[in-house]
Image (cartoon, rainbow, N blue to C red; front, side, top):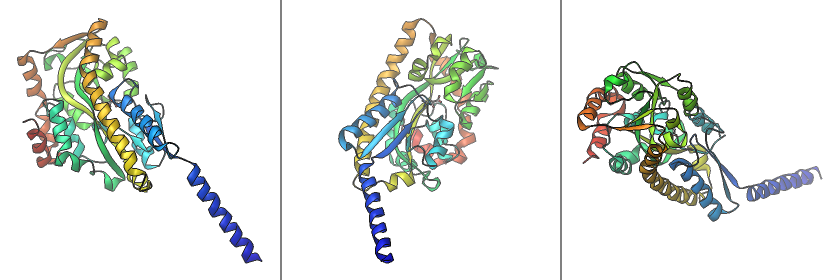
Length: 328
Ligand code: LMR
């Protein structure tokens, strides 16, 4: 009798478990730091909508924009603890997990977004997606934002103009070295603090893409923006290997397909915003955009490019050469 009761209990418990799994959708929390009207914000929302449309009640994507849930400095730890399932930090924010991605921060590495795309989709770029697997993080794809510009409280035409000024940077040693190369003072700060730091004049400037400068209103508190196109700000869409590999085999490819389509959508928006948001900033009259002459730009290249040599060892010469080759 006792055996029978125990057996019934076990069967009932199993049924409850089965029912719970069948009824509860897999929840994918996607945490990011930018506004919704940005390439990443739009990509995340597109992914949520595609999954809702195609996978109905099997998978539910919840998007948390503007550092509502986690800032980029915490999100990867949260992901490894299972509190977040998807994120897309900029390529500058993975230094605790791999040194290889430092490649993307090297100033004046890619001549334009087409070169960055060519490298990312080529064999070396694709191999990098797996560079953090041992640390429990899997790269699922690259997402573009665009080329960075430098904003400041004074006009910057040559590297000498930046000397002694304080610039907020992302948490990257390459970006630190880049500003030190022009005798400026780099400060690693979370994205969520940049506006206030600029507004209160705790810092003099920052580097970012047109869409981030526009959507977070940095242009309202910076008098000048130098159209420098000196570096890349792109993202790596990541998940934890535990979550990703643990998804049911019939669901994972469908989620990946939706993600790939959402990334393509985000990339299209990135291209539009690179020109559209610059135009909107200029039209606002709040910030003056400075275009550099070829000779002025060359001075920035000459001052910043020596930074490459400091990081070549950690990044790997083969990888660096593959990136350089993508410019041809
Ligand atoms: C930054 O911190 O400036 C960027 O990484 C923000 C972002 O995600 O575009």
